[in-house]
Length: 586
Image (cartoon, rainbow, N blue to C red; front, side, top):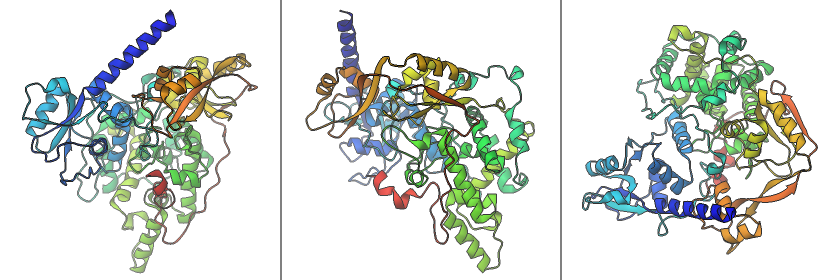
């Protein structure tokens, strides 16, 4: 009886959800020449990409507040994205000076008013709010059976959505972004509007360190004591970047807070390589210290690695796991690459420039200057504007961290010890189970273990879980107690031919609602070749766990790749253009 009641409640919830999606429409101003938009065109418009309209029109989209139900329904039904993923997408574009998010309005009425007064504009609203607007706006797209098709994991390879967003209870990501400043004209790009403080959840950084007064030495002075780059804070280019950060203190403070769980590990890795400690700040520029950050070009993780670059380092990316979002291995790969660039240039500023622009770009600039008798250090080279700003931004961050009182900045407390422990588990478990076994909130588990692309680890493989230090022993002990007990395992199932969600659920002795939940589906319509996570009941066969402190290198340091010389314009962010682009954009 109880199961029947739960099933009825689940069906009712699904019906209500589909009704809400079906009532959402995209409206436009009446002078727009096209009569309707396709889903793909709506996607492109709201992602800042060319819509390829037959009339060659350029349409201006309006967004609603990111905490509104309309906003959440719109992006979930259109792209399968959570609000955090949308925010991370735009943060990456703003970081690189490649675009700005659509302007926001407060609600449906404001959206309708914005479309009425703004030529060539569109917005999304509930169709029930369109009464008495005849002739003032027109409906260009409607979600529901006529227009809406489910988004599969293969539909958006440039910016892959977390298809299990609902099940994973996506943690609030950073939303932090830096304006792209032009050193030449000092014109800042527009910053995104922050509706609220959307930095990492407080319990991620406060889980172990609630009281800085009693928690021991602070890491920041130790990092500063290992700074090794010259102080360029009086140079105009660096001073300009310092002022840029200080004029956007809310963003700066978010980035600094977001670094708390990770920067000790990154700093330790710079020390192992005898690198300037300033490079522990580099993820602030690359991703805002957000392991979920990804760019429109396909870069992902703290270090914004491209798929092809990751492959060249031997980093794995598959249906279950993305090593670019693995804090441990991605940090090792990025810093090894930086060391290799230093071996090529024997100069850390040039290495940083090559990390951003590509080794060939820097070498060509040096050669051009040498040919005309000009200097060949970073400050003399004719480099791209982005790179001219990139290195000063790193130096500006170092100046602020070195003397925060001078700039009126309060650095968040970071203890001189690791936040987390790496625990190797040689049996598959899912995130809910990891949270339960460790006693750590599920959203913290999700954020620390950002490399997982699914609700569970890869079956049959050892996986390294990142667990806050104080909870790692409990995690290991509880795992040992479960030896031999029945548990739910997860495997990949590829939809074949005429299979339906109902038939798949029947074959795996589960429910449609569970499959939709763990796979983040908004419709029970499946496309052939769609990948699904499906449950199995198995007995545990692993023989325990191995827990190592994060200060120990728990994975072998990846060997440095050979840096090509000559006319090579590939950088850590751009190698994909030649060796992976066709695959990632197909």
